[in-house]
Image (cartoon, rainbow, N blue to C red; front, side, top):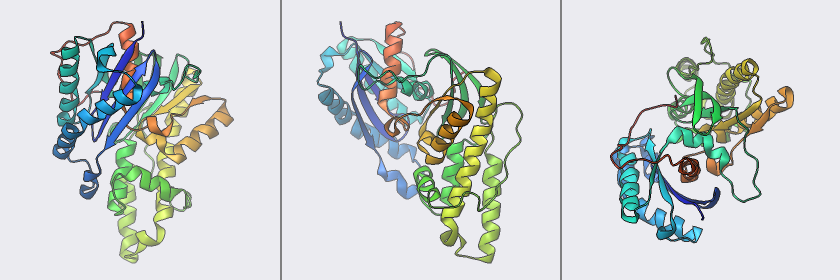
Amino acid sequence: MDTIILGIESSCDDTSAAVIKNGVLLSSVIASQAVHEAYGGVVPELASRAHQQNIVPVVHEALKRAGVTKEQLSAIAFTRGPGLMGSLLVGVSFAKGLARSLDIPMIDVNHLQGHVLAHFIKESEDDHNQPKFPFICLLVSGGNSQIIRVNAYNDMEVLGQTIDDAAGEAIDKCSKVMGLGYPGGPIIDKLARQGNPKAYTFSKPHIPGYDYSFSGLKTSFLYSLREWLKEDPDFIEHHKTDLAASLEKTIVDILMDKLRKVVKDTGINEVAVAGGVSANNGLRNAFHEHADKYGWKIYIPKFGYTTDNAAMIAITGYYKFMDKDFCTIDKPAYSRVTIK
């Protein structure tokens, strides 16, 4: 009998639904919210309202593209957290209502676990390029920077994480100060490809162990920028590509220094990257360079699976379904939690 999972993701500003059949992706639909660009960041109230408008047509389209009816679904997997509470509630409530009406199981998914397991999304039966357990995963997004030892789909151990800002937050904040817009990641990435990464030097933190810190880098960047603007009010416009390239290189160096230490200390050379920042060109290049230099077996997700998407929720739900790890209807959404 076929196992068909509908995944629903609504943790931030993208409404997404995906359908997976026997572990293979049949469809993935994402509705993005451009309304936040004018505010320089996600406005929670606007996000939750947009989710309410989008979730029914997005789920309908995902089922249509997959060629399945709601009556054929085996279970519904949904992001329970972490994320924006208002946004999560839309997806959680919809998933509970639909599952209850169809009398099928509900499966709650940790959003961060979903990012890690995005590497197990299969687009065909012949797709076998998945990491082997155990592997090390660098999870980097707008709100999280973690190094995780993944022993199994349901056994993950955080070895290091940020003690303040995440890498994505640092990029977004620096982009905003430069007047480049939101979200800052794609903008900085595009500019960095045209600039000199050695043009400027910014401070790097000295944090013991495997933990990260990006607040010092952000402060160093903002202080330097203020001093340069005193001498040249048009400094940003004249040097934005070099600024972006130097900022990106510094962040990538910080990320890779700790990751390299973890791989050396654990002896695990199966290494993956996940999360929104994994779309960054500089970080992807660094992974390839480390693979060539240190013999790592690397796993880099397709661009469509780097940002928030329901395909990663559906595949996580598929594995939990196989273990009959279901969720009761009284489980609430949660806004803050990490992989433990």
